[in-house]
Length: 385
Ligand SMILES: *Cc1c(COP(=O)(O)O)cnc(C)c1O
Image 1 (tube, rainbow, N blue to C red):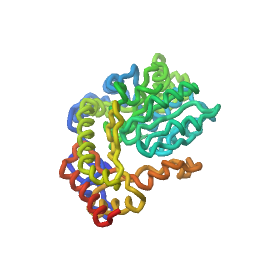
Image 2: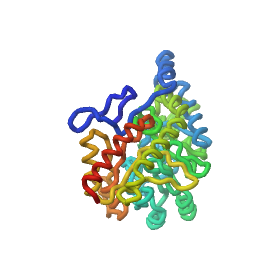
Image 3: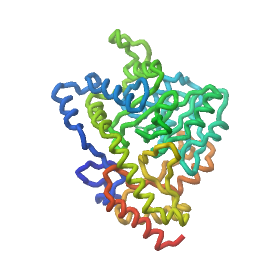
Image 4: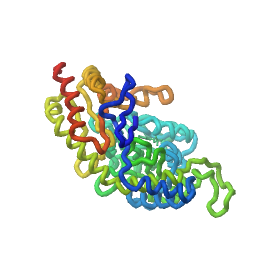
């Protein structure tokens, strides 16, 4: 759940407020000023100067030639798939461990999500599994930078080039994550972001499609605006959608972008704090912590932990519950759920029963982090593994 900077907690299972919520939005910059400007000038819908400016500045931040905004990350994925020419019956490879939108968008494009396994250390899609799933019908793969850690893009790009398929990066959880000098979203053929309330940058609801292929971005822009030509109003060239972002949302987005690097620095700091405080439990083999590959930048959207086995996870979660600390278990593997059901993957099924995310909002205090860690330590102490 999301809470404001006024510090009111989200709802605990018993109806009271969480002592430490999982996420808390923070509007610490020019948000109110820019939104007020929209209201005062009357530009509240999707026309208005902030939309184009947000697209331009976001593209510059990610390091791509072009970007087009959309109403949320899921519609951004749908637009990216269509802009890449994904057609009914095509196969698109997705990781088993992700938010459902990754596979949902593939199905809304009338294509078939083919589920690949993940790496149990990084939680990201496993290149060997992608290679195994490629058939004559495969047209694209969607690596997800899960919980802010960059996916293995070098390996994925190499496989994609070998087989002539498109790479659509789902960077919804990884604003500002990097591999070398490139940002997540700028490495594949096309990249997608979400600006949902608990993401690293938020516009309430919102999304963005980015690419160095300007043609792909114009196709996405045409599709999101009813297929209506820019130079001929009310002439609909193709069947489209209304997937537009509003000027109000873009105003929020620009203010959030101004603070993005500051927030990422805070997130990396809180991750370093957790890593330091939990180091003894990690050394004892009681917990597995997220890591960072050399030469990459993990932005730790959500800081996660993995217990040694499912019953240890249960004990730790019960301890967090009893102290009113919010946590979230890993996503259910797609392969388990009715819309996407298929034969389960070994690694994703293994990790989802052991993993959970702990409070990771940028402004978390050291005292709040200590509260979280002591709840975990007490669960481990009273029930030694
Ligand atoms: C949040 C998210 C999305 C979807 O974004 P919405 O803006 O909520 O539609 C897609 N993929 C991943 C991995 C996400 O975390």
